[in-house]
Image (tube, rainbow, N blue to C red; front, side):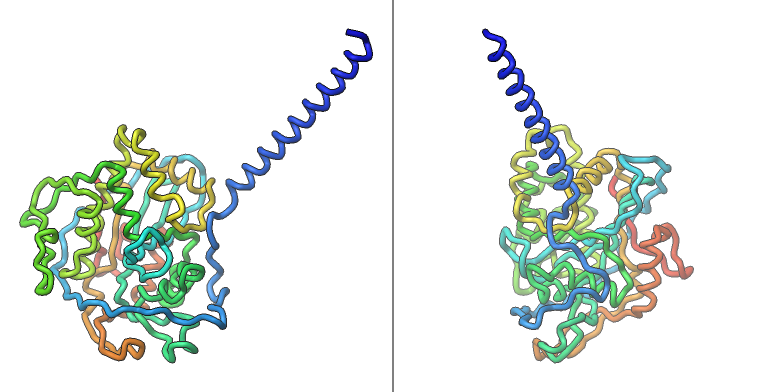
Length: 373
């Protein structure tokens, strides 16, 4: 090989190396940017985004009237030991929305599950506070189309639709209760079925007497769950979580049982073999404004968080009383939970500060609390 050829090859190799480094640097930069990019529309500041002038309400169906159930006896979690987990991030509040539409799409439907989840990375603690969906609240931006600014809390997501649903629900919670959500996750109930089936089902132990969800109009045996150990498939687990012939508070307790069982299943070594099916169940069917980087940090925290540090809380039952109001949209009286919103705002503030449900800020009454074991 003559000197000129060797020189040309050397120059080409240097150029190729330089181009490779540039491509690698660009790819690394793009990946880093992608990790920091929200996966969906972000929540706006309180009072920020308004519904568009072209907004029109979709059909909102009437809901069955629930009757209060006795106060459940739940176990109180013990405080977590301080530990720097995954990253020294500040506490984060995530609005978790379960949508009651029977399809593989999170879009549309009402918010069947509304929980504010406070994630404390330093304490390795996750606390989920349930907001009853039947609270009669002020929803910003709906008055000019509906001639009323009040509706049930769970309709805020439906009126916001695919683009504005999470944001409108978050703004409604802030307006009425002072909750400031940093991020949201919205998922349809049907995706829950697919996820549970992908995991091979859930093992749940039901309390003495079991759970009978039959009503006068539906006497199906699928609504009956015997006491003791049960192995439920996705449809059965969803049915248990959605039983409606109890109060919204007992319904939340049933959901807590299901979610704790779901976490135990995810922690099992066998989950590695089921990851492809589990990921397939969620891809394209979950809406969130979390970034990939935040999701990875939350996943990291989940591997280090003791079960007792996953705490489910509800507002004290004594704060609510059943009532009826006239719904001008449905043109009929509807069931609602009446409560002093200023008191609920106080509890919500203490929840976001991480001070409650460790103690009751107003001396009485205490929260309804349970923890995964």
